[in-house]
Length: 260
Image (tube, rainbow, N blue to C red; front, side, top):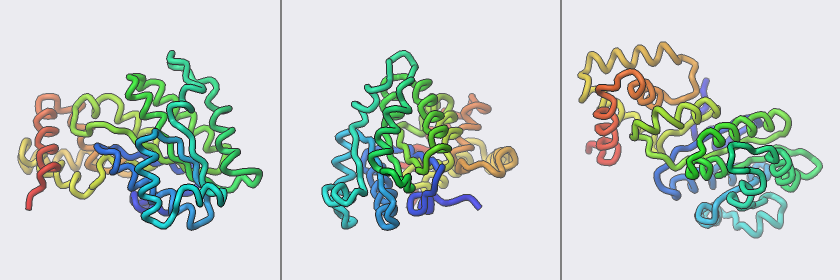
């Protein structure tokens, strides 16, 4: 049975690799704090490679959960690195990242020590690459993380600030993101997101055609780790070009202004 997003955040586990698509930084900080604090409770240290904005939000969220940054660092449970500086240490701006292993291995050594105990890692470097317009490098970096996870004991949480209701997003970077991760959260409130997609399909295609889409997508991905509503948006964006823009716009409206 597929883990829920909450189960992933609390339980994690070596070689699991989650991603959250978010609209506002606070949405991501809440998930990261849950993920990191759950690890602290299990004596699993965390490596946080974050931007200054996200780190400030994370500190607030951790403190509200009873974990102050300085105390966690002093206890050997937390190592923090600046995402922009870490990225600059290996990214050459030409799609390459030859020094990635060295940079990340040094950070993991700091957080895991000689015991190689399980660690929880949160990183924003892939999102920074997307903001630079280098989606190819972001996808390559995700693969390098997955390769490293087969050698070291850690789980990984990523975040991408994207507009999930944009057709360009659904046809461009999101399919690669979904393929690179074991757990995907396409919107902070997934239940509301799923209802919004369902209402949009029915509104634009009608109940019968909407049901057909559900059957087709479900049959194609019975064991898929990507939530069904997100699979549907990718599918309609690729296969129903005449209707996809309207479906996405309708889904956005229902998500932002859910029915009472």
